[in-house]
Length: 287
Image (cartoon, rainbow, N blue to C red; front, top):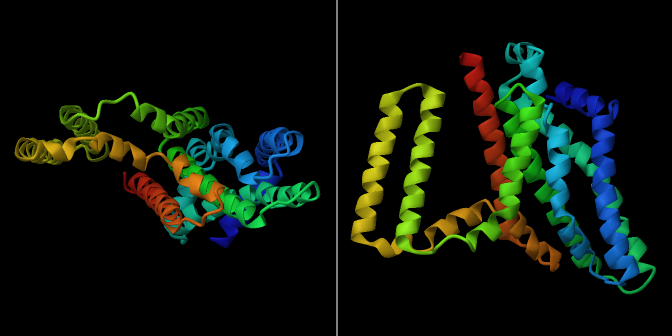
C-alpha cells in the first residue's frame, strides 16, 4: 500500500493536476477571505469556508477523474489486480494520496485565522473547528469521486458524473422544498427508487430472478406499509434526501461546535465509499 501511496502522491505533485487543485482551492478561499474577513472585518473564518464549499464541485472531479479510470483505459489496472497487494490496500493507497494532496491547501488555510487575528479578536476555537469540518467535507467529496472513477474508464465521463452527483448533493436542500410532503408522493418516490435499484442490480448481476425478486418483495412491502399506516410516508422523501445533503452537516462546525454526529456521518460516508470502490474493482477482477 505504501508503494502505491508514494507513486500516486508523486504523480500528483509532478504533474499539473495536483498544483491546479491546490491553486483553485486556495484561490476561491482567498477571494472569500479577502471579501468577508479583511474588507468587511467579519471575524468568523468559518463563514469564509462555508461560502467556499461549492469549490469542491470544481476541484474534486479534477483530482479524482484519473485515479482509477486512467488505469482501466491504459489497461494497467490488470497489473494491480494481479499484484499480491489486496484491493483494499490499493484503494486506500490511492485515496490517502488524494487526501495528502488535499492536506496541503488545508495546512495553508490554517494560517488564515492567524493572519486575521492581527486585525482584531478571532475565536481560534471556532476557526479550527470549521477547518476540521471543511477537511472532513473535502474527504467525503474525494471518496465520491474515487468511486465514480472506479466505474468508468473515461476520465471525461468520470469528471462529468462526479460533478453531477456532487451538484445534486449540493442542491438537495433546495430540492426538498419543491417536493410535496404528502404520503402518496413519498410512496411513489420510493417505488421509483426501487425500480432504479432493481435496474442497477440487474446490470451488475445480469440476474433477472434476483432483481425481479427484490423488486417484487420490496414493492409488496411498500404497498402493505402504505395501506396499513400511510402516515409513515409523510415527509419521508425529505428525510431520505437529507442523507445526501453532505454540506448541511458542515454547518455546525462553522458555529464552532464539534458535532460528533456530523463526524460520524462523514466517516461513515468515507468508509462506505471506499467499500463500494473495492466492490466495483472486485467485480471487474472476476468479470
